[in-house]
Amino acid sequence: MKKKSIVSLFLPAFLLIVFVASAETDPPQKTKMPDNVKAVVDKSCFGCHNTDSRNEDAKEDLDFKKLDKLSTIKKIGTYKKIGEAIEKEEMPPKKFIERYPEKQLTDEEKQILLTWTKKEAETLVKSK
Ligand code: HEC
Image 1 (spheres, protein in one colour):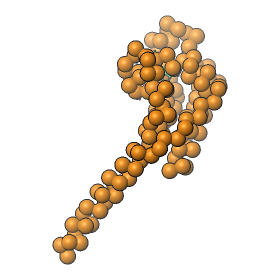
Image 2 (cartoon, helix red, strand yellow; image 1 turned 135 degrees about the vertical axis):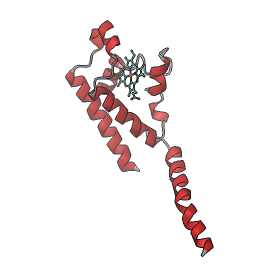
Image 3 (cartoon, helix red, strand yellow; image 1 turned 90 degrees about the horizontal axis):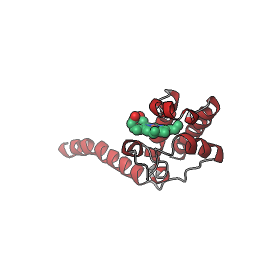
Image 4 (cartoon, protein in one colour; image 1 turned 180 degrees about the vertical axis):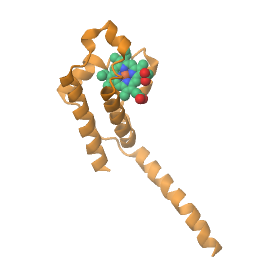
């Protein structure tokens, strides 16, 4: 009886570790970024969110150059965050837009990014 209770205690923990470990080491899927999406990102996001950016906070949170190297789980999370940042109009930052009003996203550009992040995230979720 004692043996059984030890197994039942550790099995869920063991399964959780296996699940987390396999999720983290999943071979990353190639990120598909259509030209129209890339154009919007290049215009309004990439300057801060890339490996060579001097904006440490920005690139720590999101690096478009490294997006492809993230695990599937992290990628899904990143797409969600991008969608939220756009919907809540947190990105591009207001101060930045005051200085560079031409970098403001148009409604159409917002839609392009939102549709893309949603589709990519859904594809990744289904592939799991
Ligand atoms: C002027 C620089 C700058 C530009 C341009 C910019 N960002 Fe950011 N971004 C930041 C900084 C700084 C942070 C981290 C601090 C913060 O959350 O305010 C950040 C954080 C984020 C985060 C993480 C938010 C979170 O909740 O963790 C996302 C997602 C993001 N940006 C997406 C975008 C997208 C999409 C664009 C283009 C539409 C964009 N950013 C344009 C500077 C920028």
